[in-house]
Image (cartoon, rainbow, N blue to C red):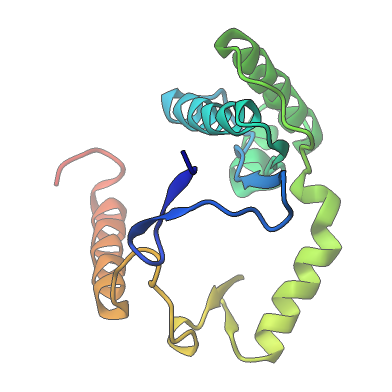
Amino acid sequence: MALEFYNTLTRRREPFTPLQPGQVKMYCCGVTVYDYCHLGHARSSIVWDTVRRYLMWRGYDVHYVQNFTDIDDKILNRAKQENSTMVEVSNRFIDAYFADLRRLNVLDAVEYPRATEHIDAILKLINTLIEADYAYPAGGDVYYRVQRFPSYGKLSGRQLDQMQAGATRSLQAFKLRQRFGNSRVW
């Protein structure tokens, strides 16, 4: 029986054909290491571990990579709060993450790149996007010019105006939080 996966782009099940026969390369976004893992992290780890193990059982050589986001405002704030450093906070929660994976019997990834190991490449990519007018800086952040991507939203099946509506709701929630604080009064 041929292995099939659901293709989000085409919205149908399709035969799985790896780019290189017998080999599968998997990349899964990892955790931002500012706190202990929660159930959502466990779910993601278990789901992708199950897919990986199934592919291995089917005879594929699987190269599984999962990153750590080890630079983030939440990490910096935690370090400041604890009179610590970003590296110390990140390392502590990476160690806790691995302890959780052991308890869940999740296989280790082949590689765990850290965002801080790729800052130069990240900055170069951001500058390339800005220079090509695919992104723009605003308020200390950089945003995609989603209108420049004709196929933006193709995987989610949402139209751009639907996503902007969601952003408006987020803005309304932000304004309410500013007015009432973080309590759930709405």
